[in-house]
Image (cartoon, rainbow, N blue to C red; front, top):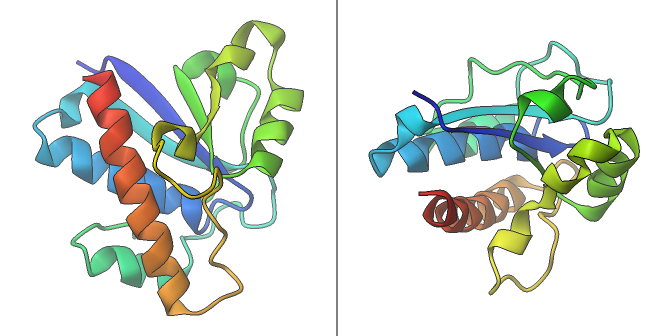
Length: 155
């Protein structure tokens, strides 16, 4: 039975948040806690609704035995703030957008992902979309570290 419902959010829901969904689910399952979580991802923008994750994200995650191929981009809905226990933004811009969208009663659920990783050099997961393949690997490293820290906090 799931005890935590987490929604990871980036701009278009084709790079960072699908990677976070896949990595966190993988990390939780490896630790024997997969059944305790419902994990999804979404974007604050509508450009990519229905599209699969960026092929570079799929390839980078696949090299770590994490399958993103089943995911499809969706936009954050107003119902998400009620449905999820945590709404975790990849960067401050999406964090601000989520705070504007959220009913006041649910604003406390909105967090920055890297706030769970106190040793991070910044507070934002950089967007690898306009860079090369190495950017996806770097983002996955950050997401994996933050996922492990978040999992430790929640279990």
